[in-house]
Amino acid sequence: MTTMMTLVKTPQEIENMRKSGQILAMVFAHLRKKLKIGISAKELSDIANQEIRALGGEASFLGYQGFPGALCVSLNDEVVHGIPSSQKFIKEGDIVSLDLGVTYQGMITDSAFSMIAGKSSNPRLEQLLLFTEQSLSAGIDTIKDGVAVGDISAAIEGVLSKNKYGIVRDLVGHGVGHQVHEEPNIPNYGHKGGGLHLRAGMTIAIEPMATLGGDDVYVSNDGWTVLTSDQSLSAHFEHTILITPDGAEILTII
Ligand code: MG
Ligand code: MG
Image: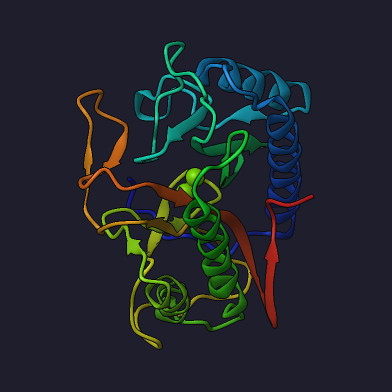
């Protein structure tokens, strides 16, 4: 983590972030097709890296603080930062959470989604994914010039707590653009009106992480993978957002 406050980006920087976000979204569309039962996390990460490079970008996470891969692949009770190991294979019914950063002309976007591999045997998983994504949308819907960080946080918390999900509190959304993580933090819980007020031209990553159990997580012995303490299943959705004078522009969609 750095302490750099996220800056109002220049028009050229915003244009480069749009391009970065488009590359990211295209790679995600490709990964959804490639995500089959039996494929390894490393294969997915290698595909992501190749596709990013073919589209003129770079994988922001590769080597970031020593991270060994382009793509975070987190399964089931793994919340985020799963290492894309060649020994980690996708199984039927797994919740697969993919998290990716793309750098284009020095500008970074960050996005994540969860999906169920193959057929799900548990309708509660579908609901968890649905409402975690809905909480991200609720957070985005609050955004406009001058929005308080707490407005975003409270909207996300509202959707997740109403559905009785655990909310991961040790990890948060963040400013993004020149670096993978810029200030301020964007927690997935909070009070309306609280915290800093954000300005048009700032770019932030919003990323609710919800669980079917409690809020607590821990980092595994590999030094990266964050897991739920009670082994409950988890979901993660993230977009990079440009704050505009009257709303938000989602940069990580096609
Ligand atoms: Mg991310
Ligand atoms: Mg992020």
